[in-house]
Every structure is written in structure tokens, then in C-alpha cells.
Length: 381
Image 1 (cartoon, helix red, strand yellow):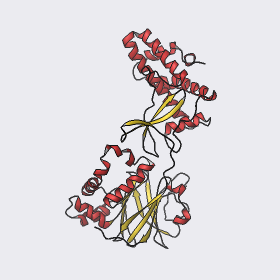
Image 2: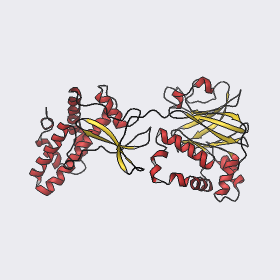
Image 3: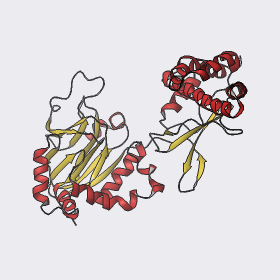
Image 4: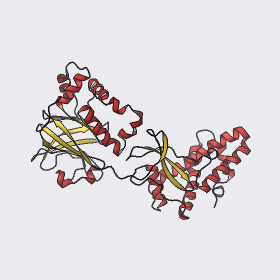
């Protein structure tokens, strides 16, 4: 069955006649099911395959497409909405054609081009010879903003490479590995928050990281929204500012300290499957505090480094400023640990992938990262 059979010209003309602002509802109610039925027919005929270059990546539309192609749909409503929106873009093209050629002639031509595009599976209805591209989608693993290019029901991922100054076809990737970073805590006064909202602190950190992050060619490399970007951003803050920024989500994080060896574990205060929040520390641990992660991060630093950055940012009384800040803010953590060099273990999906026994992660928690002392610290420069 052709797409013109599924969605005839008469219905298309009705859609064009609808007032502005109402086509979306019509497309999702009518055009989307027809588009999905056409997609299913292509899949059942063996024409539709998974999108090349998508293994190891996490892109919602791509994941929905691949699952549908494999016959095990997930997030099918989102895929349906996207296909309906694709159809709506064809309506915009038809209106432009109708303006140039008259409603009947322009609509007929646009309808024919849309239907032929869906039949071919390369969606060439936008401009002559141009493939239709879905809106850019961010890969939550690698951080690239990808375009899904479909031709003959075969999809590829493409992205504009700023360093090469050209569009490249993306290939499969492997998961970003778990990692660790070492931070010096020479005073042993450990401060943690989602961010220290003090102008002088922000100014100093921004200035230190400016050379690295202001280069537009490396923007995606440090995106907090991706697995790789989160790891790179943590390394950048440590190397340039002497502090750590660990990616989380926007929930609360509880910090617990092991009685036996002072290891720290930072965990979700609540996660799916839990009957209630972690109201108390796990057995053998004491609760250091809770952090509200509005910025989707936890900032880790020795007090001395925060004082240094405040002074660098122009604060005349940095000692008093940080004491006042910690006293005035409830959901921050201030705890004493053994001075020295501490190792932070973290990374994407840390709670599922970490060796819990080796890292001393207690049962029943969903950790973001752990910390343990590994040696002596170098003095603050």
C-alpha cells in the first residue's frame, strides 16, 4: 500500500484548510498513525533496519527507531509524535507551494512529493534532492548533537565536526568507562555542595576554566548532559581549579561516612524501587549531610582551596565568607576527614557498574561516587 492510499489528497486538503495552530492536533491524530503504519510495513518487508553508528550511544529517537525496527517497540508514542511532526513539515512545504502555484496545484504537488518520500523511505519532500533530517538529537553518551539522515529506510547518524569544519558520519562507540580522580585535602575540612553560590568563587572558577571551555570547538566535549562530557568536566575542574565537580541528577544526594575507615559514599536520597528515602545512614556509617543538586552536580573541595579561590575572585574576607555561606545553607556538607590525598571513584551508571564490594559500598544505596584516602597531600600552592 502506498502512502497516498493511506492518506489521500482529500484529507491532505482538509488539513491545509485548518486554521493555524490546529494542524498539530490533526497530524498527531491522523497523519501520525498513517506514518507509523507505513513504517511498520517497511519494517515487516525487511526494509527498515537499525540506524548505523548508534551502538553504544543513548539518543531517545534513535533508541525508539531501533526498537521499532527490531520488532520490540519502546517509546513508540514518541516515535509516532516525531513521524507526525515530520508529516507536518510537509504541510508547511505545501503551503509555501500553494502560495506560489495556487492552492489546488501547489497542494497536489506537495502531497505527491510527501507520499513519494514516504514510499521511498528517504523523505525528500523538503527541497528537491535534499534528504529530510530529523531535528538534531543529543547523544547522551558522547555528547554530539546528531542528525538522523534517512534514505531508503536506512538511517545514519551525522554530526558537524567543529575541528574538521565539516559534517561527518558517526560510528558505533563503547560505553564511557568508570574512572577515578585524586584530589588533595590538606586541611581535612571537606566541603560539598551542588555549587558554592558566591560571586567571587564563580568568578575565579570561570576565569581558570575560560581558556579550556570558551573554545567553541570543544563545547560538546564538556557538556554536562553527556556521559563523556560529565567525566571531562570533572577532570577540567580538578586540573584548572583544584576542585571536583561530579555529575548527578537534580535530586538530593546523601553523604555517608564509614565508621571503620572513613570512606565516603554519596548516594541518591531516593530512587525507584525504594520504599522510602534514606532517612538514616546505612549500618556501619554515619550521615555527614544532604546536598540539593539543582545544578545536577556535586562540588567537592578542601576548605583551603575554596578560600584561595574566593580571594582570587576578589573577596576581601574569604574565611568569613565561606563560614557564613556554610552556616546559612542547609543542604550542603561540611565534614572532617583525615588530611591527605583522596581518590574519588565515579562515572556513568556508577551504581550499576561499580564493584561494590571492592569500593565498600553498603547495601541498599544507589551511589553516585565514593571517596577514600590513598596517601599524603601536597600543600596548597
